[in-house]
Image (cartoon, rainbow, N blue to C red; front, side, top):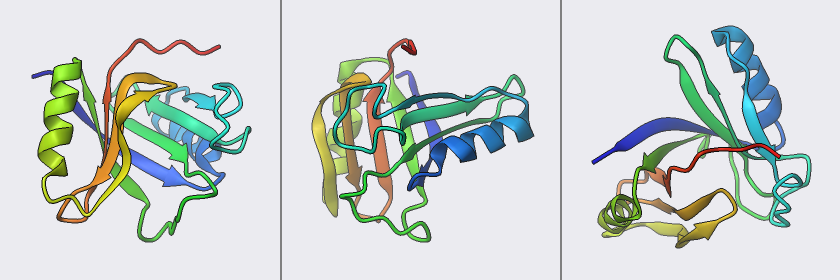
Length: 140
């Protein structure tokens, strides 16, 4: 199985600033896409839909701005675990397994603007998982 875990940080309107800060600290340029760039009406146009900092030294973090229509408490929902899988089968297996007894399915498994297969859920232990199929990223 080719699944990679990454810390996924959550913000409300500060993800771009945070990614720039972490990029500066760890010597890497952030990569990000805004809701506006993705033509995604679910978020504010200038807010980050998806972003990451990946340094040559191994530091890797992802971040986004939680949509304004979703509950968000930075002290409670600040970090998710991201699973980036190499195939649809791996995504489906991870999602199905973690969904057993899940407290909350935030996003049912399906296509998204940035991945052919994506879902988000909070497992029975209260850990929120963001699960998607890896694809080559292209800004623009």
